[in-house]
Amino acid sequence: MSKRKLNRRQSRRIDDRQARQGGNGTEVEQTGLVIASHRARLIVEDEHGHSFRCHARQNLEPIVCGDRVRWQKLAGDEGVVTALLPRHSLLTRPVRHGGLKPVAANIDQIFVVFAPEPRLQPLLIDRYLVASELAGIPASLVLNKIDLLGAGERQALERELTRYRALDYPVLPLSSHSGQGLKQLLQACHRRTSILAGQSGVGKSSLIKALLPDIDIQIGHLSAATRLGRHTTSASRLYHLPDDGAIIDSPGVRDFGLWQLQAREIARGFREFQPWLGHCKFSNCQHRNEPGCAIRQAVAEGHIAPERLKNYHRIVHDAL
Ligand SMILES: Nc1nc2c(ncn2[C@@H]2O[C@H](COP(=O)(O)OP(=O)(O)O)[C@@H](O)[C@H]2O)c(=O)[nH]1
Ligand SMILES: [Mg+2]
Ligand SMILES: [Zn+2]
Image (cartoon, rainbow, N blue to C red; front, side, top):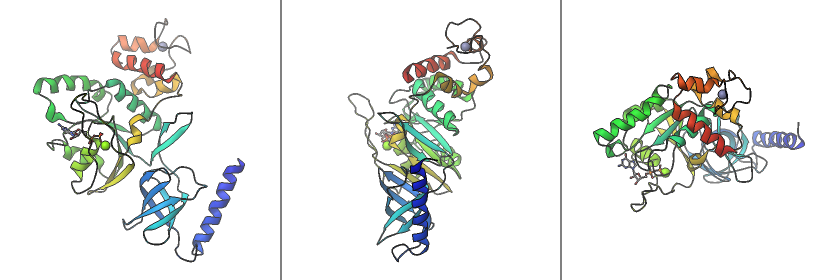
């Protein structure tokens, strides 16, 4: 065990002891849920749903939205987080100089949100799906803004989406503006903590606003000139849904990425590749032009969509 870890554990023990004794003579330690995080600033919710502005003790690793923590009240609505409780899942994103940064914790489900505008990018969808598979978190696809689609466009999109349905990824077509499909989204959120992933401008914040009309959330505007989404949300935030469930809007998920991954790991993120992995003639097969490639054979036989193999190659290429 590293010296640092030992120190961390020791100091946590000291924190605990202080808390049991009443800390600075005031409050006892309790368990809480982190509902917002921005760098070292956290909003922690107690068991009764009251929220407190907290900072984390410096010896703790980064704490994110969805984390469960031990904390104690200070004066007013302030508090200090003294320990991080174990996580059952963690989404991370790579940072510039190597390494990974946590984005959200204890997520049960990822909604990959996309829309006709900004234009649908299957490569991006596949990136999110790979990240979900590798994090071991189930994913669903959410097609927002269907109010913008004419009948013909809708059909063309649906055709494109059949390959995801065939892979058992649920697809939820909906509109945060017209309200179509929102009931199904709410049902899918029941008793789970979900996170919205997807590029800026697809309507993630609008979806939360549609589910929870009373909350105060920032909705960005698409630039009419470029039709490009603008990045507006600044901090991750967890919202409780009326029917027992929670949803997280997080700007960091936008690019939770697959940098630094080996081709082999990326292949594990394509669920339909699994039966064929390890069956290529060459153990280091890149599934391009090698003879005896089981993956390309599976494409030829219609078991794997050619678009998915193409996106696999692009993701591998980008990870180099
Ligand atoms: N037509 C249409 N526009 C939408 C819909 N949902 C969101 N928008 C618009 O898309 C833009 C980006 O929305 P926002 O929620 O900020 O996207 P975010 O960046 O993913 O959080 C805003 O101008 C919204 O009004 C929808 O269902 N239909
Ligand atoms: Mg937003
Ligand atoms: Zn191969």
